[in-house]
Length: 509
Image (cartoon, rainbow, N blue to C red; front, side, top):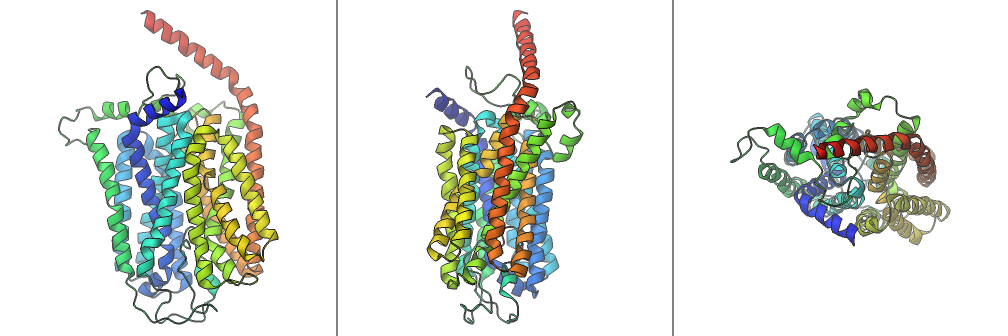
């Protein structure tokens, strides 16, 4: 009961910050899942080939990775974080508005790259800021954060569906079906993409109005930067605000402190909001040159690496499955009808969204490590069953649902668990977010090439192998935990003793 009251008190003190970070992640979800359904329409709009249009999506993915790398640099102060979120979310709306005007593939690639950069900055800042605010109690709020990205990814294809065409006028019928889905990150997350030479498709002459879908998305996303701007205005972080404090930096540093309720044990004395940011939770490069990292045990760096590899594998599985499950379903031996196979993407993202919603109360009841054991075991077993029952159509739908449920909360749980082990020092959140993006990009390319060379069955084989590797890396993180605590226990006790003595002397004075 006391813990529940403390969580509610923390949320009440930080509700506007929390809702703002959740809203930008809903915008992030809309962005990553919306472009995939419109690939054929964008291909016709730019007069490009499918190979050229897939490199457009790759440009977005690459810049998203770059944005994740540099996003931590904006978390040093509250003003920087909010101004970066404001411009990033505003840029996403602008990009959506101008995409229908990009009639050249190069212009479209530039627009996608700018959008990806903004998305990467949002990804890093929102995760780091929530960990900064809630620290040891951040697991439940991270689950809610990633629920909103799943919700956005589920909603966006539904918005696009009425405006897109399944076939492009004047398209090349000799293009291979696999090329339609051979692009990167989240390009296939909608059930409405069919290739021209698919055995289940028929020529349809229709005029697409996809530009309306992009403009609707721009309007839907527009309230997000407004919410961020309102928060900055209320916190008097804008120079032209009435009654704003002249010393913006003082106000900024004050607002960045963790607002833990008085009389509660929500954080350790050394776990202040300021020390969190200046202890290394900036960009990934500043972490590497930070002098405070010298003299740390090898397990400190090992946990960063092993935790990153877990997310490299699991986020890669999510991107690979969302990208290639449709291709696997319409090909032999499944040979599902295109319309029936199209539901697999919606089922997968619905399961991911539901899993993240269910994980919110579970994070309150269970520790992150316990949820991770259950989730990663479920992912591995589900992929094994999909591999064994590779001709069973019913289990393909059941397995898709189970995989989405189990893999949905791995990312927020692992961020919370890793930060807990490292006692909120170092670069865990920044490193994990960056490596997750690398996994999605790299493994999609690898699996896509294997499907073309070895056939669609390699899709399941790769998924199972990647799942096993992720589970092994996670077990390594668990084994490193007690070793790391033994190596750093004496230093932590000495630090707390010095802090207690110093506080006592100050109170006496």
